[in-house]
Length: 280
Image (cartoon, rainbow, N blue to C red):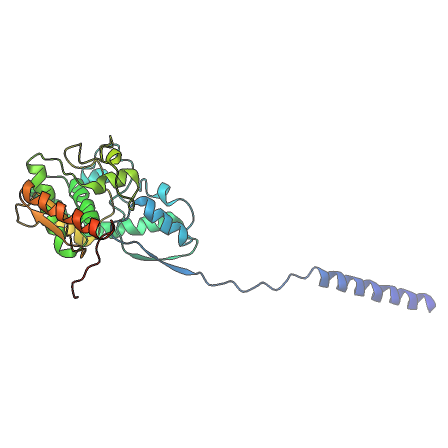
């Protein structure tokens, strides 16, 4: 009888130990999974791959935007008559607002931008390029310069006209935004040494268009490149009033007067662009 009781106690004790052991090995209750965070990535018109890469990083996208925007199976620049060996997708990375998930690969943003580009640059733009006697890729280059040069909507088509007029006359374009692209400097005044930069992007010293787009243009700049104003302007300079308009002219003499007025306005304002005093 005593033996039976002892055995029963041993069995009960063993069961208790087994129960405790099982309790110790019990799986923890899983924590609730947080919902993915949506990030809104705003790409302004006229930014470069380098500038967009900084935005992609700040938005928490993963991977390298610069690597992702070198090439894509979604878009071949050669289809737009880009030269063989075109090294990246500059110009095709359409500016817009894109909703992505934080942590998405940067290639997702590139994918969305290329889809948007094909929706905004289609058969009509290709047809207009042929009518202007340039390639679709060259039209995109012109649009990228317009995006950097024209501050106000009303100036876009006139800037386009100046570019085409000068190309037709085999004049150097003299657009300093192309030099700034080569230098990746958009804030400091260009020095005499920089203006003489030995680069195919220096449109002061090299005739014709730069070899690639210098920004990623939006729909309005592409439209201006496809439909330039019917004017004979060959020159423009920023207006002396600081309101953002360009002052256009057909003669070098008038251009020099306009440029002198702009320099005088800067000098009178301590080297800074004057504040616009026009009523909105």
